[in-house]
Image 1 (spheres, helix red, strand yellow):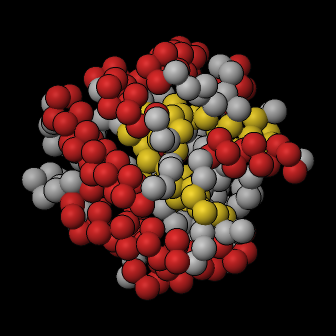
Image 2 (cartoon, rainbow, N blue to C red):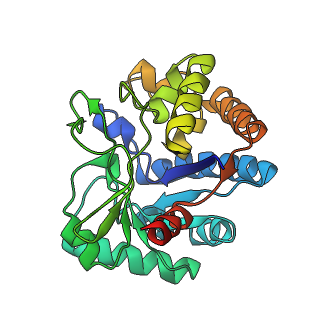
Length: 261
């Protein structure tokens, strides 16, 4: 059975700050919330579940929305803040906060921007899996060409890599979904599904809003946003379902891995 994990990093929209454009925290939350509501409606339409990696700061600002999302989706941690990180404090604090708000057992963690984080710190905070690995090379970000493309256990913690193409390790993350011709992305998806039996993709709600006002952000981030990208995801989910793909959460996937081990 072919499977797909759709994951969304629900966070403060701080991308403009990376490129020297000021944006208030209120606006950061508003942009992310606008995108989150659009995605919620789309996932509801298709009756598809996902895993939502949420920051503690966002959760504190939108607790009722997070409770609603938790009724159908897995909630996992994206740290306390998107722009800063203190492992010893933020890992346990975000886990506790998200659990208190949603009533879920929070088992997964993904570091902001897929940056390095110590497995021991994640495990000590009580998490079961780490979804912070993109096993590819991104200039200026990271080089993980030596890392496994499939899940593995390290330091008693499940590592769940984002999907890359089987041969060239081309990343199938949000920027690829946004910028590649749709036919090429579907071709890559078919290749990955045939090789791995599952694809694990990640996006951000703010991508699905109008980003034209944030002129300092690179064009490859701003383009194909708003309704254009939402329609592409709509079409992509429809295409996957037509191929017989089942949508599962990352927590469910980890449970399957444990049973096979």
